[in-house]
Image 1 (cartoon, each protein chain N blue to C red):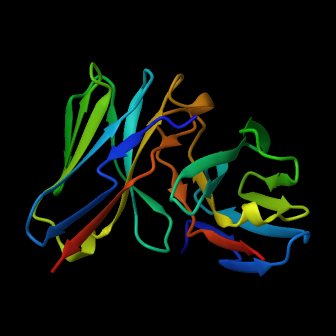
Image 2 (cartoon, one colour):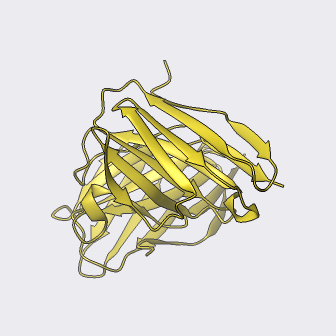
Length: 114
Length: 114
């Protein structure tokens, strides 16, 4: 069974569209994350949720809106997509939000905005 | 802001050789982790070393941490073609990452030739 699963894996869409990426973890973890990896492989955190509560929002444009209906799910909705949003988006989870936790990553969602 | 910086950015070796990757960081940390990313996949946790540890082993992996120099190294011994991947260091802790989130470096791309 996949521990952290995200869909879709590939997404090609036009500028201005709205799209969502879904994420689910079956590890029983309290904390979930969204990371963005750019074309230079630089991985940067976007959001972190702990038990459905937002705890980290790293200066991400408000076009990006995470939603956590329960602690096993953290979806990412992106409005008015821009060319610069093209990247790989990784969902991840960890047992708690304390430092020292291993983070478990999904396989990534490749977003291409044309 | 980015915390870890891996060096070299790319490394190409022959199977059977050892591979050493270095990571430098800027602020005080509680722990440092190394992750591996195969092409087109998510990141996988390899090893965690705490700030009060100097060396840690896991199979063919050896990690060192020098907090006085704010640096860490990852050594892969007797490398195999299957070790080909990008390797990232990540720092966590009250200064190295807010609320427990990890801050990743840009990674070292390792290529092991058969």
